[in-house]
Every structure is written in C-alpha cells, then in structure tokens.
Image (cartoon, rainbow, N blue to C red; front, side):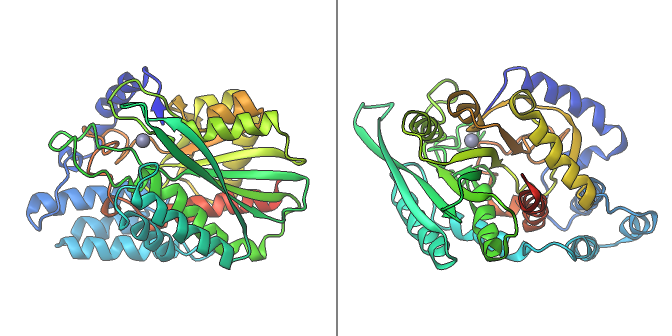
Length: 372
Ligand code: ZN
C-alpha cells in the first residue's frame, strides 16, 4: 500500500504529541533484560492493554511493581487471554499461520516462496470446503521487461449465492525492505505487510463451515500488490486492478455487495482508524464494521479517521464499483514511535501478535454473519 504524501507530516506531529505521558524509552526497540529493557517492555505492555481497553488501575499497579521482563510478560499474557474468551478465532493458530507463511521466505510474485504459499493455501482452503481457483495474468517486469505470470487466488464459499461479500488481502511481498536503514537489499519477510491478512483469512476459513450469514463469501488473495523495486514510484495493485477490470468486463453472474481488505492487521500495538478513502467510497460499510467492534468491545477500532491510504481497495472501488474498505494499521509498531517497521527487516513475526489478528478477525466474522 501507499500512504498519502501528507501521512509523514501527520505521523511526526502525532509522535510529538503522544510522548508526553510515556517514558521516551518506550520509543526504542530493546529486547534485553536491562533496566531499559524492563522499562521499555512495561511501557509497551501498558500501551497494548490501553489500546485493547484492558488496563485497570490494579493491573497498572501490578505492572509498575513487576521486577522483571518475564513478570511483565506474564501479566500481559494473562490479561490478553481474558480478552479472547468469547472470540471464536484462535490467536495461537493465527500466529502459527503467520509464522508458517514467513518461514517460506520471500513471497514476491512468481517466486519459489509464492508458489509454495499458493500450494499451502490451496490445500488448506480446499480441505475446509472452499472452491479454489487461480486467476492468472501476465505483466511486464518493471526492471527488464520480461514476462511475469501472476495469480490471484479466489476461494468461494456458498458459490451458488448471487449476492456476495469479498474479503481480501494481498499475499505477495515487496521484493526488498527498501526502507531498512541497515540492509535495504536484504530479505523482506512482510510478516505484517503480506502475511497478516493472508494468515487471518486462513484462520477465518476454519470458521466458514459454521457461517450463518445470507451472503456468499469469496476470499481473494491479490498478487502483485507491490511488485515494486524502488523506494518511490512504481506500479502497485496489479492483481486487484486485473481482478477489478475482469469483474467489470466479464460480469461473473453474481455481484459483490461489499469488499473488506485486510492489510497490516497483526501489529502487537494494534489501532485501526477509519481510512479516509474507505470513508469516501464505502462510508456505510466502515461505520457498520466499527459499530460491530464497539458492540463486541474491541477497542482497537478507533472511531475516527487518521490515514489516507492507497491500497487494493482503490481499484475495487474505482474500477469494479464494489464499495470496499481497508482495515489497516499503518502505525507500525505504534502511533508516536520514532521509527517505523514498514518496509524494513523489522516487519517480522516477533513484532506481530496473534491476539491482534484474532480480535480483528472476530469483528469481521461478526460483521459478515450479520451483513445484508
Ligand atoms: Zn508494503
């Protein structure tokens, strides 16, 4: 995805504004057992619990008096486990899927990792009763002009239904971690940016046999979201653009009432704001989803706008005419941090959370079971 150019300014201002109440050490990435490590971990735990609406006065006191990183971790995990009691998605399984996908290495379009991922997902969705198709298309390689074959994966549930919901994510990863300060030509794993939406759909598939809604459901995994080899510029959204043009020029005999895009949904410090383009094209859908989150008490969904993002939902809205929204947490690792993990080697499983994924997935699941 691409942030709107205004985004950087917004982020910097937010950083200055939010640090007031938090130790500046919380802004640094520290893993050690040092005092700094303990303070950083404590700040992070407090932030996570605040974001999830789980921080009680008592819990804050317990965290303040915890003497080790592991004690802080235990308190955090206990509170998070309680927040999952009514959630039908399994946080452990979400995290395991994310890890499994990242273990394939790079999943850049047409790579060995992408092919392995396609097989893994195809087997998984088929086993659970989904009807899986690959929608292939060719593009020109932006560097040497050679032909590259890409494929969107379409998984249908209740294929006979004429009115459908499109749940989507991109499953390719950017070729390089261009924004990594140390190793911009190293391996990019795309744990949050690539694997998180895909892993969440893999987990939602486990629930599909119990789906009670009246609409048909399609999961679509877009290829070529960022087959981009330079930091700025380049052509994005190749798979979603092809999908949207094809839907328009060769109507499939059914129609999508709503589209929901999942991108960067695994941040440990998850905060989801209304995305500006989603409000512009699919206001009712955005409000419905956030209303569902409020009903469930998933406080990570913040009912106000923050970022304007260009992502796979743009062609869905503009070309296919499907009212679509983007669920994306672009502040990775968190609002107000000095560094961003986005497009760096820090976008790895250790910086993601199955709890975040399960809670986002719960909201989507509840919404889709009631969508008309
Ligand atoms: Zn990206």
